[in-house]
Image (tube, rainbow, N blue to C red; front, side, top):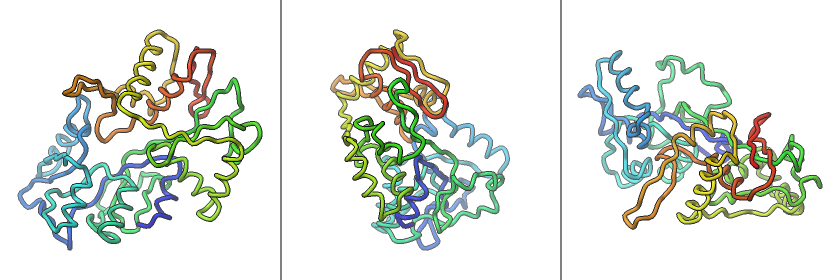
Length: 310
């Protein structure tokens, strides 16, 4: 899968998919001959209170003469890429949770179309109900999307009007007003960069970023250390508890807030994060907005949806 396809597929969001059989040269270690389907996935798919994995296992086994055995590789898909590169056994039949950039990395490291077999989509019920715009663009047909997330601009509607196009952000009305996260270490930052490449082409996006820079756009590295993220989240939690921030019922945001968790490290520090396999971009963005300080605010998160702070 080439990078041009990747850019056009991602746009301004992220998509996760179910991958075809993990195999090499037409044969894998887990071939299901013993009646067990071994599926690799991420931790929160199977090991949290509201995980979908146990329900999926029960529903599948009720309809089919086979069992599902979930496995959570310590290093995610990277573990299987490394196994394939070292010509070692691949101990799973399928993988749930592949992202588009995973496909690019597989093809870069192992060769075009490697590691995963093509899915027999015509044998999958309801596969035709997936919207065309969510297709992951893999020319080898190795994945089927099952989840998607969207990334959008958050703005203070008491200060600026809603930008309707990317070009609006280069206008005087938005001078020194846009904060762009660093694409090297931020998922929203990378998605925004890819959005601009998709909109302006690989030959024109640098000119667009030049216009953004001329309009005063700083690139915020947003380096989330354990300490800085803890301070951001503690501040957000405090302002939510005190009623200084109210949030709308946006499924992506409320789901991330519901799943958000913390753990105490052996050294006694608290670490905040989303469960493995889930995203916390909306929580991080809300925490950054809350960190800007007190004062009347009304920020829109998507069309017609307000995040009120005071």
